[in-house]
Image (cartoon, rainbow, N blue to C red):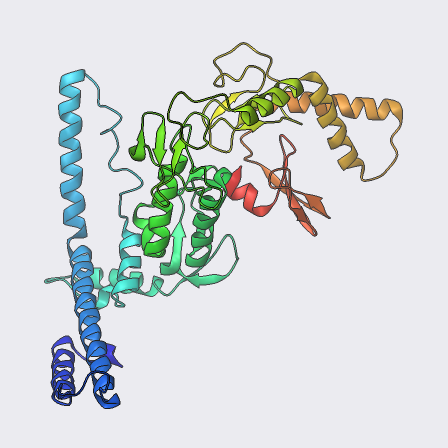
Amino acid sequence: MFDEIDQETLNLIIEIQLQDAKNLIRGKHRDGEQPDTELAMQLYCRELESLATIRSDHAMGRSMAHAVLLDGDTIRSHLEEEQQAARDREYAINGEPSAAVSGTATPDTVIEDEMIKKLAALYIGFDDEEYPTAGESSSAQAKRTSKSASASLRRRCLACTADVPFFEMVQCPCSHEYCRGCIAELFKAAMSDESLFPPRCCGQSIPLGINQIFLTAELVGEYRAKELEYNTPNRTYCHQPTCSAFIPLQFIQGDTAICIKCRSETCTICKGPSHDDHCPEDMATLDVLRIASENGWQRCYSCRRVVDLSTGCNHITCRCGAQFCYVCGLQWKTCTCDQWDENRLIDRANVLVDRDAEGHQLGRAQRAALVERARHDLVQNHQCLHQRWRSRRGAFRCDECHDRMPDYIYECRDCRILGCRRCRYNRL
């Protein structure tokens, strides 16, 4: 109802009602004996004041969005001129433009025409026809009318497959789109599962940037905090089991980390309680490392997690994003170790042959030929980028998250890895 009243009229109505409510509050009574009517009027006044603030903020938002719509081309033109000047200056100094200024704008900050229309639909609720420009030609008006009609289009969300209005959709760098609810779930999942961080689709990161308008302020704040945590090497967490909060580098002095929640002090070396003197040997960690050494497990050079490889090549991508060699533990492509273990390769080839056989008995010669072919394909695709997929009917278990899919699953046509829908688009 309020949306149909202009701002000045609504302000006057609120002011009159607020004055009337205040006149009903006498303010003279004994402690603890305030009449219910006065208490009700006080609460009513607060609601009116809150409503006035909300409407004022809404009017400001409409004004800012309107300015963006009218001045968007001018702002974009000025930005391009500044970037071109920066490229010219870099070229004059170094003989070639630097990577920092070689593009027109970073994907995280550029505001495209469709995003401007989404902002208008979300925060203003009008289309271009309400604001014709001075001296506009009939052809330009027709073009605006066509764009306005397109605002009612609905798009299909990749995750939930629901059809929703275009201004409720987030477009990823790969051009896939997610609705507001699904993109929020994707960001939440990335905060709870580091292998999904940063949120991505088809291997390309989904920037927070302008897309944070589709997320709650609380979720954006939590994501920023988790981003700081995940980007910190050799992290330290509070040693108190009931707390276990991440401790940022700003709260670490020497070998002592002070928890920002419970104020407990944690040793950054052994990750246990802080010590008054030199850190003693952490027997529990030493035992784990001894077992890891006996079983041939490797430790991530970045986050110090212990990793066990059962199938695949020796190229390890840790949950923290670090890539290293499973044989020596060094950063990937900095050693001369073999890229795969022959026994693991044969085991994986047998798994693929059995999967394709679907329970049918194979002759020895036929099976040996299929295993060798599968082995050859695995060698050729051991650094697969998972760009070609097909669906397989039946019950399968995802090779990444290990969830069982009862009806169908996706299989990479090159490396033959099985992935559920979430892993195919957002993890691999």
